[in-house]
Image (cartoon, rainbow, N blue to C red; front, side, top):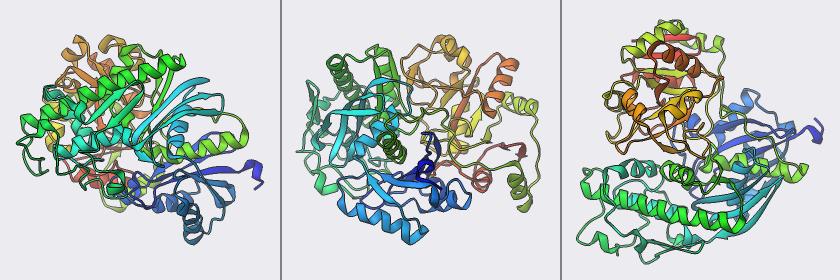
Length: 541
């Protein structure tokens, strides 16, 4: 195959405490062909310090790409010189693929995954995370195919480290459990001064390193290892950090609430500062901090920006995509094609699914949409496995668990019998696009990837109480029209006059989302799920 037709294979992961490894392919026309995350194949959530080996095995075996198509292998980690040699050797040794490796700066990859996936011609780009390539974020301007950095944030400005620190004070993992702290926050009161840990002034953050270990003390370590020193901030006087097996108490809720409140307040000032400095009305936001959906929703309601784009893969799973997009942009001198759909993962056809169901001796029947609606009306909980899997951490309908939101106890049913997770954690709604403004407040963020928390109107609280959180908010997803979920949601609305369903990821606590029919059936029989829809087939208990 000629080089003009070759594409760009993006990779992320490897050693050094990396997380969310994966692969992505941008073809010669600038389209994202696929995104495969390693955790969905090796079943190890976040897959810390792993190479994307099983994802690559799957992609090659099922011919999502071939080695002749690879013009460049791309990735983040430009400052880690040893990896410039280790990645090519890894590919040659395991897959007999020989291609030039092009590393880019970690924060540039985050920026690229947001800006190039958006439809903006020009935009302010902000990335914020823990650390990557010795930086904790980036302020840049994207215009046409170019991304022009304004400044990189130092490691002692790391908003990601601040949040990891708070998570560990209340007994959570500093990486994987970040969303638990966010979910806990509405149950507390903002009574503690968190500026003692992280300060903000005129576009700059400052971590108090008296409390947070120097980056060289904990980089490349597991996120369950402590990032705090023995000396704790004043609000922890006469308190101990919570051991994860201990009960959550009101003080832990107050710490979470205070931390979220402080984060939101200083980030609003930070984003406003750079909007005024650049006079740009469009924003692309990425990096691990962009997974804080509470802040995203507040920013979207602030009217600082007219339009805000949040990619479905804001965390490190987006690094492979961003690096491949960067290589394309620099090579072709034009912007890659914007993201059309988040459904870029694996796909299993009708025949292979039927063959697998029959091989394990399970009874099944053909999908009947009316029966599914009747099951939802009867408060049955249903798992959906349809089409290509989602890119990023959110279940957007193709690998989802759905239920009726009309019964307020449905949240507790799904939490206790199926997800086996903390009772305080909320569930998200998926809604028909044309009905959004009847049920939720307007927001400047794109709402199709479940990335922002918005205010629920009284109509949502009355008709769909199971998806409204304690603070009368919801992390909304506007439903993609080209999905089985949309067909179910439309039929549910026609039958019940409720255009909303509860939607959560198709997995058990501590596991990644299901990837294959095998994963789906195992999860189905390991939980209290009532019905499993596998493409065109239905399995019931």
